[in-house]
Length: 317
Image 1 (cartoon, rainbow, N blue to C red):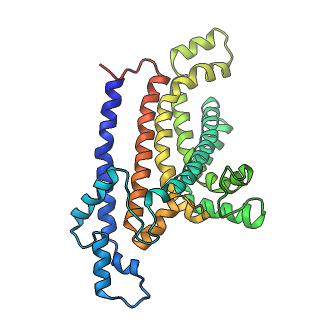
Image 2 (tube, rainbow, N blue to C red):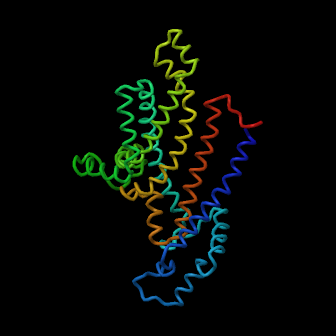
Image 3 (cartoon, helix red, strand yellow):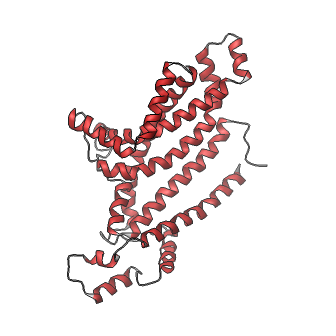
């Protein structure tokens, strides 16, 4: 196991490097001069002033050199300063990451609490009304874009019924109930679309497990259906489901970019969208690096969880 862990950790660095290079190249393709945006588009621009700004932020150097200089600082934990606010990117990301982490965990829990029971019921009652209803809901959730679902929730629960706030954020430590009320709609918009994929995988995996001989033997001994399903079927069916649940973390991070913008949640997604429009390179690079690291770490932990769920799995030779 230790050798496998070291190999996987060694694979994280090339992945993060490739992601950072791609994002850096895409940011360079955005039209506009970052130095002019820093000085202010509405001000009388002096070329000497622009040259000083370019030199300060290494914008006068070739793109590969800019990337290498940024990477060298990032390895030491220095993600640079925002070209707009002049604050350190790392300090900004700490507060923003807490918000996105809270939203992501809430959305993941909602998706899991919906998907696992729905998938189990759909598999147990295969071909009957519960299976039909769960399948139709899952197909509809997959087909609905997250931003459209979020807009519909704002109109229904915020504007029409007035039950929940539709914008803003309250720290959990300041007001737990107020924080949950503000997070509920964006978390639902993220969690419902995520739950559909997990539910379908849970159904397929459980149907395959329930067709095994040991399940039929347990039923033949007189055990009731639900103890067999929960005690024997679900444990073995969870292995492929865990894989999908780990991948859904990446989908939640990607969806957070849109959902945070829609609901005005001050997380990394909204922070990155604002930075893209302002061509704030250090902020965009820092956000992508943190998000990519989080997704890769979750996938790594998901692989390790396989051995817990199935003792037959051994990573070391």
